[in-house]
Image: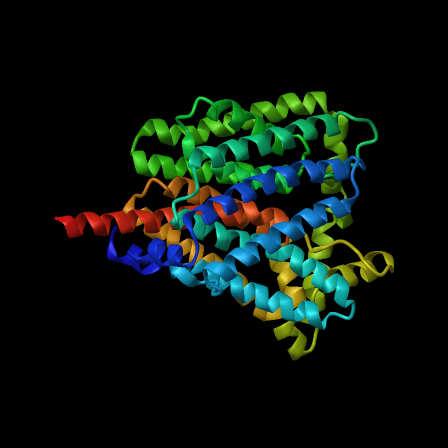
Length: 419
């Protein structure tokens, strides 16, 4: 691995050894098994809550237990979020501190803390997963089996839910959860389960007709195909782009003929300027203008945690609470001002730097890392999922890749030392 990549994913030959001096290997394995179980249980609980079979407290308590497990593991292994050269941890820590301070300053303290704790699930999950991979306790087959099970659960519930009458057309129906999971599937393209799992995942993303999710899916798959063509240097791989686009257009045409009325309800806002993008155009403009017209202090530091919901509630309906920003960039700008935007830029620049270095190295992880970043890029612009606990799938995937790169470098150093 070249020297530039070493600067970003620096190696420490004693990483796993030093961590195991603190806790036994079996402890790391138990945490890994708990993580798999928690994710599967949450996928089930979230849908049972949607069906009103379970109270939402079951999902909340489960996520609370998951976060406590993460925090306990972090404290036992190393309280520093950037320990073991996890540079992404510095960015996640900055986000956690910023959102935590604003949550404490919020007038409705219990609600502020609740949403902050809810957000912490995915940054802490990313840190824990990174350390578990470094300790070589993550069994890739077991991990993928858990992911496949979550996909089957989500897609099955999605199909059943969307086939029921009186469907709330704004229901996400696991579209974004499946979108975050997609890069995991591409880790093992040689698996016999790859094609069927990939197909049902795409179906689960497309069926709810969430335009943000569909756009993210198409762009990420195009990015994947381009990177695959770059690595393989074959015309066949480049043609994958055209094939993917043709398949998507064909599927959409068939689906349009069958579900014309539902698609019209989800897209009629294109013909109504005030409601364009489910009202996004009007909301984006209002939020930006409100921030732009503010005093210098609010421009720099924002209006405070969850200020978007307060403002949109007043602006659109004269109520106490309204919709969230549907854009992480605008949400962070309004809530945290320029300070929040700087942290967002920091996150993206770090991930882009990793991508550039993987391109230079022509590393096979380039394809899956790029598709994960493409999803994040699109979601940040048009959907706004960064504060959602389901972003944990993005966090653990990126952490998995970064840790695997570190282990590869560790093994390369060992081989060089033997020579």
